Image (cartoon, rainbow, N blue to C red; front, side):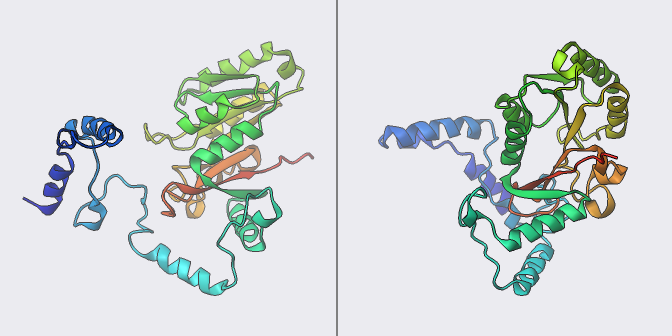
Length: 284
């Protein structure tokens, strides 16, 4: 029997029965974990350190496991020996802002042909920040029914007046749902905005958003429509140099906000280090 299999079997052995004399707090926790162990869904093995093939991690380009990312990090560190790697405070405070991080944000934004960008701690935080701060009272959010759970978390706390789903990757359903927003006076009179929330690649389905078609429908239907695109699963694997679906389609000037992750194909810090971009449409 391989050491990996032995470790997996050991990790699924029930523990609560042997803790009858332990404090109830710890025993209750192990009883909950035993439910996972009994169904063979408890992951307790550090299999990444073993001789095994990886079909599940987000390190899709092997930038982390190959050592490429580590080497580039050390080079960057040597180029900026005085760079401050501590936050020093929230970004809303003077101590939370410094030149190096703002330079990195602008370099990333330039790479994606965006006006500007901001780094935040995780994908969850990024989507919650986007949808709790940008939609205003009177706005309506239209979202693909398969959108990320973190978008739902953000929308629940949003100031938008309403949020309505349309069928997954269905252009006609999107058209019908968009037309239905004209029943709202603040949308019909262009006092507020319809915000469309989609992903570039949907992780659970593995299919690609018909973004170009959705943008064309929006242009034909309403002027006051803007798109928020979650590019978490397209970063690094689509578009020029892995810049994402929006760049691949040349739609940079049609999308208000993009969210890209460093924690998937970029292999940086798990699911953390997310950033989103804004681009103002040309007025002329």
